[in-house]
Image: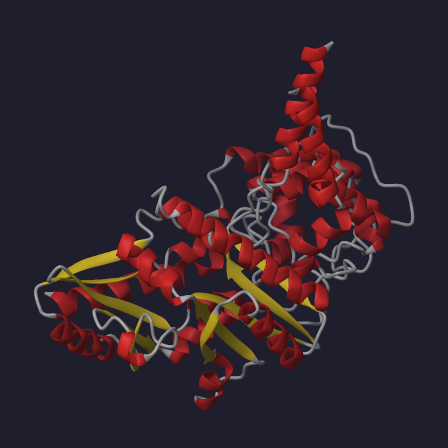
Length: 152
Length: 349
């Protein structure tokens, strides 16, 4: 009697502790807010997780300067100094993928966010030392995308 | 031991870790995985308008499950291989909440027909929308690069995802009844006989035995990062990259360290430098095909010095083809990959 109960307990524990299922390579979210509001929500969600926004790439302005039509479009770059320094010291091949970024563009009276899953980097850089970092970025990215989407 | 184990389970459950044991929340999973393209209420946009009554009544649950599982290679809709069976079922149930009637069920039995005759009929009746070889309509969904007055993009029939998801009987029913609210009309009403429709189904099923259609192909990436060693010092290599960028029809934007904005400028590592550049015409073409590519903008090449050795590197643009699952990006990605390589080789040789 005791052994089946132990077994059941162990199974329950394993189920409780199992990580969320891995996702594909791309993360997208549709936000039911106008672009400027969605942009503010996004920057707030990024900053509240301790990241510094380093640059807002103004894609639509650059296109319009050369007379190409475009709706509001930004790429938000962000990171944490120590993380970036340590990760790139460990593997400089990561530099082209950094800082982290999220693309945001207007679609009518909504906004769409797009980014890649940081865990995708695990396939390119299978260094076990980097795994916890990619997992942390993955978790943060999911939370940021969920927070902005759910606020919409 | 047992008591302690069960106590721990109870405590963990109390701390909110129990949802993994509960049935997956279809609405939440849909919101996270599907709504960006199909709309929060299934009204479509980039993807098919799932709430469309004719779609709901025309497709089976099995078609939805297999579509989620296999996606449409090369046609934006990704394969959600990370979702388990219960999660897929929960999404299907959520999508079915928009259904007013009974979902269709179809026989798995193959439809027998004359594929030779079907090929002629396909060219006459189907190719204008679905492509001469069933490769599908051009574009990336209604609200991306397609005209916004059309509710749906003609699907690629010569696609392993579609062929795995759609049974012969479902294809036949779609041809016979059409799909109201979309350009897909009933071909019985167009004058075809049921026998003709069987022939078309037989021809479409034959795509499985043909080589993969171009629209279902994504670029293979040998290495996600292009790297070249430089024989010059870091500053000279940076200047070389800036010059090579201009020589290859891009304009040079700016030079920054990787750590720019993350710390005080005095602390930035001067041995990790990024040259940003752009070609607006190319950018406009890429965004017109798939606006999501902005996440890799602007173009950039990194120059770094490690232990006295200087290297230049960049993300291989071919990565985008598979990342976005969009075969329409293939040509541009290939061109970009060649341009990046040319710039890096010119700067380092």
